[in-house]
Each structure stands twice: as structure tokens, then as C-alpha cells.
Length: 506
Ligand code: NAI
Ligand code: MG
Image (cartoon, rainbow, N blue to C red; front, side, top):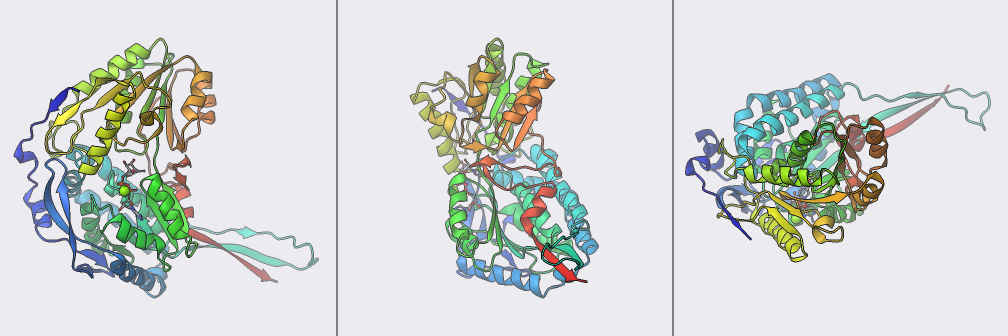
């Protein structure tokens, strides 16, 4: 395997003074409106993915802290000002959270970049506006959660009139467990609908990336969110996460992460049968037909589909299928794009792609590449990276077979496999043959083929002539083992609401 060398200017791993100040003390957790140390007194390290060096310490929550946080959320739900607030007041606070994200966009983008490894420019242009807009979008919903009046025809009570209606009520205390690939965006997708519906929350950020969630805790208090409405407990999945998913005081758990842990969440939730929503992995097919209106645009789209966020995206277009006739052009185009991508630290304005989030992910992704090569795949771009940070070179594989592990399993790195196909009838069963069903894309100028194929793809999102288009208003979620339920749009409100039927004999 060839080797890529990455050189990093120390200036691009040294955060601004503002962020250094934030990192200089062990960050505490937020429980009941107070910043507190963990009950155990323990803290855990946060590493800079560009160097592999420890850059901060964060209070380490476990089941004792989760207990306190759940109690605080229960108190805030049952007796705090939150439950009595007019919807419009709640709406204003949620809107203000979005505003404060924009007001602090530099700092939040920088923190997100050094914590996750992603480019600060991308965080500022994509992660921050999408996250802030999610709060703005759900602020609007707080005043629009309505029941219905329902005419009854009770057959065994002839002549009796009833007035029947439904109330939509918040489900109560919600546990939210989020991953590290989009720390702020996942926080916004979870908190937006939970707050709009009037729930209270215990949020556990990923142990790899707790920093922006903790800064958001400060901003949420500044926005006027009453104490205990959002509690933030950083910690490891096996301890804090598992305790939250199993807690009897939690009425609903929302999770984004691996399908493996998704199954553990379901088991943990069975104790009190709390409600569960899950956003899990994916292995998304991206199908380029030879009649695509603009093959160059399809190639750019397919490159972005896999290389955006270094491939650490649950919807990454990791299985690329190109119709015979354009296959060679697609392989050549993607390979050229992959080779052009400059690796560097997230704070380096000239870098196109940063490191992966952690040593564990680096080893996992490199392991998949090795496995593919051992099984007979050919690497036309990519290779080991010579650096102590967690870098992987954008990797393009050909000569893969559908049965290979790298085609069946989620890699979660900048690794794409490109396979040729004959026609739509050949490729549809291949595209759908996956335990996952999160997203799919297709590129064609044939309108009928586009819509007919979109209908037959087993995926929660289908993009036609585009990829990675997200909007707070557009429902997002998975078929099959990619998850339960939908986030975003008004669909997400359902995760956090109960329906009460009220029936009055007149
Ligand atoms: P993970 O599923 O272990 O972690 C996600 C979140 O779950 C973190 O907050 C973690 O602390 C928590 N968690 C872990 N174990 C838990 C448990 N037993 N109970 C409750 N919470 C728990 O994912 P990980 O290990 O970070 O990444 C492994 C793979 O998962 C990745 O390579 C990728 O394939 C997939 N993944 C998918 C994501 C998505 O957006 N759907 C996001 C992150 C990872
Ligand atoms: Mg894990």
C-alpha cells in the first residue's frame, strides 16, 4: 500500500484564546441548572484528532449522575415553570437558542472542529446553520401542537351525544444519546422537537465529542431555559449511556449511533417499556445511470456523497454503482477528486479533509480497507497516512464483490467501492440487498425512471440528481435496521407526544 504524508502546522492545532480558556478547566456537567462535578469525582480526556494529544478534560458521568439528572428533569417537568409556560413563551426560548448559536458561530464552529476533527470552515457553513435552523424550525412548532375534535357514532348508545377530542401531551422525561459525527446537529435534531413539545431532557453527548454540547448548555441557560429542562451528562456509553437507556424515570429514549448499540438500547428500554426512537447505520447505494443529464455533476455529487465529513455520515454514499458506458468515466472522475483532496487539521483553512474522530475509528476504517484488499478489491486511490493524528486518505476501491464485508458493513470513513451494472432491473435488487435502508440516490434525466426507481428503493431518503440534502422540515430516518421512527419535520414531534382521547357525554 502506498503512503500519504500529512504535515501539520502547529498553528492549526492551537485554538483561539477564547476556546483555550474554555478548555483550560475540567468542564462540568449540567444538572438542574447547576454546573457540577461528577459524583465519583472522575473526569475523562478529550483528544485533538489532528494530533492525538489530550486537549481537555470533562466530568465523567455514570449511573449516579444519571440518577440526579433524571430527578432534575422529573422535577422540571412536574413542578417547574416549563410545564406552565404558554407555548409562545416556550417558542421564544427555543428561537433564542438558535439565535445564540448564530451569535456564537465562530466559537462553536471552532470547538466543533477541534473536537471532531472536521474543517472549521465546513462546520461554520454547514453544521452550525443547519443546527441553529433546526431550533428555529421547532420554535415554530411549539405553538402548533394541536389535537382534534372527533365525531362519535357509539353503536350501543343510540341517541346519546358525545363531545370527543384529543389532547397532545409531552411524553415527559426524555433520554437522548447522541454520536460524535455531527455533535451539534445531532443535539439540535434531538432537543428541537423535545423542547417544542414541552418535554424535559437528559442528554448524553458522545465521549469523543462532549465539548459543544457543554457550551450549548451555557447558551441554553442564557436563552432563558428553566433549570432542569435540559440536563447534560457527558460520559461513556457503557456506563452513563446504558444507565440512561435503562432508567425507570425516563419515559422515552432517542438514540443515534451504531445498529449494534441500537439493539442494546431496545433491550435496556424494555424494563419500563419506555418509548424508543433510533437513527442507526447505513450502507447507502448511489446509482449513476448513463443517461444522467450531467455525468460530471453526478461524479461531483458522488464524491461529496462519500467524502463529506470524511465519510463519517450514516447516509454516506459508500456503495457507488455506475451503469456500463459511464463506469470508466465515473471511476476516473472519483479517483481524480480523491487524489486532489488535501488532508490537514480542522483549523487549517487550506485543508479539504480533516482526521477521523478517534484512534478507534482510525483502526476500524483501516481494518476495513485491509480486509477489502485481502478479499481482492483493487485500490485506485487512498493508502495509509503517515501521521500521529487520525488521518485516512480518501480511498476508492474497484473490483469489489457484493458478498464482501466492505460492501455489506458500514465503514464510516472516506472509502467508496464502485461497481458497474447493466440496467435498472439488475441494479435494484442489488441496491436493496442490505440490512440497512437509510438513504439512496440516483442520477438520471429520465423522469419516469427516476420516480419509479425512487418508489422501489428501500430507504428513508431518496435523493434524485443530488446527495446530502438536509432540511429541518424534511423527515429523516431509516427502513430496516437503519432505525425506528423519523427525525426532523413535524414527523419528529410524534416521538415526543402522547395522544389523550377525552370523551364527554353531553
Ligand atoms: P456507538 O453506537 O457506540 O456510540 C454512539 C453513542 O452511543 C455514544 O454517545 C455512546 O457513548 C453511546 N453508547 C455506546 N454504548 C452504549 C450503550 N451500551 N448504552 C447506551 N449508550 C451507548 O458508536 P461508536 O462506537 O462511536 O461508533 C461505532 C460505529 O457506529 C461507527 O463506526 C459507525 O459505523 C456507527 N455510527 C453511526 C452513527 C450514525 O450517525 N448513525 C454515528 C456514530 C457511529
Ligand atoms: Mg461504541
